[in-house]
Amino acid sequence: MATINDNYSKLKAGYLFPEIARRVNAFAEANPNAQIIKLGIGDVTEPLPEACRTAIIQAVEEMGNRDTFKGYGPEQGYGWLREKIATSDFQGRGCDIDASEIFISDGSKCDTGNILDIFGKNNKIAVTDPVYPVYVDTNVMAGHTGAANDKGEFEGLVYLPIRAENDFTAEIPTEKVDLIYLCFPNNPTGATATKEYLKKWVDYAKANGSIIFFDAAYEAFITDPSLPHSIYEIEGARDCAIEFRSFSKNAGFTGTRCALTVVPKTLTAKASDGSDVELWKLWNRRQSTKFNGVSYIVQRGAEAVYSEAGQAQVKGLVSFYLENAKIIREQLTAAGFTVYGGINAPYIWLKTPENLSSWDFFDKLLQNCHVVGTPGSGFGAAGEGYFRISAFNSRENVEEAMKRIAAL
Image: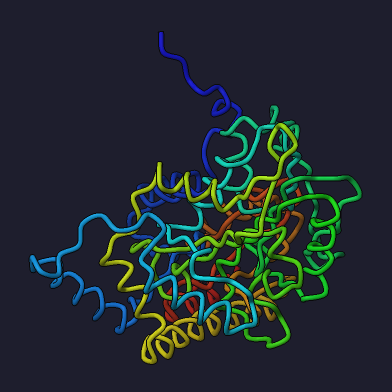
């Protein structure tokens, strides 16, 4: 008889965002006239940049001509896109990253989970708390943890609490860990990291033979010139870090799907016999075996991000969402909420009022304001008593939502 992967049974009943959708759908069915404004998941609302749309349309036309038709592409991504990424996003910031070290994928969410394929079962794994749920859940699915306790913390993971008291930046662990998840600008808290702070992590990783998984999906929202956009701006990071990026939030590709992962060729980890193995080779093999690449059409759209027009249009999109974040932050502050984030990041992290639990505040906003956000406890035990609001929506909806919340 076929058996299942029992690790899935350790997971909570539902992933955070499907549970939100379930509650919202139930409310909508019971209140069909309610005008619900969703500021929960980090899904964009504004159209794809014109430069990307034009490139995609042209690519579709090419697919209709035998001479320019494209079938299977390279699993690692087309060279012309990887070269532009290397030049614009990394080398332009002083990062020693070659195009061959960049892998194009269909999402950084996928890659932050898939990367575990090339790592062993006995690594000690550190995550911040609160944290993007995918980091934890994919490790549970892979069998890297024990069961969860009453607070939802999984045995075998090292949790690094991030609180207002430490500016939502985790302290360097006192124990040795092997794999470390870092996300800056941070999801869900909106916190950012200085070069000095990231240097401490790089030094720790190099001293302990650790690998940092650096999620930079929101780097485009950094406007402070003193803040790093990439872990590779830090000396020594090539020897201890893998970086994940996405076109989803800067260029609106949430429904189009294109992202990238950087695995430096200098990066190694230990085999069971103690020998050093190049992680680039393992990831390249994994992608070549399990992934058929992102479509030519989508990659042409992503390439257009680096055109002069594309750069201007993407900057406009990012500025639009940052202005939304500013409105949310200022209006909530004026309404008496304690808020964090919303600067150099598209997320606002607020303290729930009146000692309400995260889910109780979610229900209160939904029932009384018809506004949807994300309960902080869904990101981890240390997120209890907090709530995330996303700046990804229309200006009209953001302003209306703030009016409703202010009148709560």
